[in-house]
Length: 201
Image (tube, rainbow, N blue to C red; front, side, top):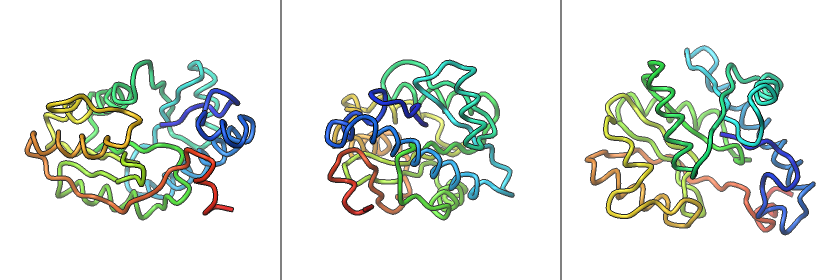
């Protein structure tokens, strides 16, 4: 899942502290990094690497996807992050995918081992989550056994507050209500604000 790295159209919280142009350059580098890591993880395992883009029309999105080395590029569509995540799961499952993993494009410490572990765990668990340091998650993976998964994006007793600090907790509550026992990966930190850059300088 990636947003086209144009100044003012991506990484707005980061741009507010370091400038929109610099934030867009960082987003471009992060997107390239995450796609490279995903290509390494998918190599030889029969997995398709799909780039889901927002901020571009279809033809330009496909051109960007080719530049980044994605096997296929699709559009995220409109709506909340939850709606856009759910749309990608629906598309993948309709196309016959047995396991689906969704990640963002702002993960400087993402490694191929993270993605390989997620796919391996989906052989045994219906749900894999990568906790983020801000209370969200940087990865969600669904196996074929997680049939009632839409609630994971809508919430159980309360709606999931996308962009807030309770996204992981609300998702875990929704999973528990569905009887899904997740595997949790290592906690990773995405890059959203200027202070997040300190450890990468």
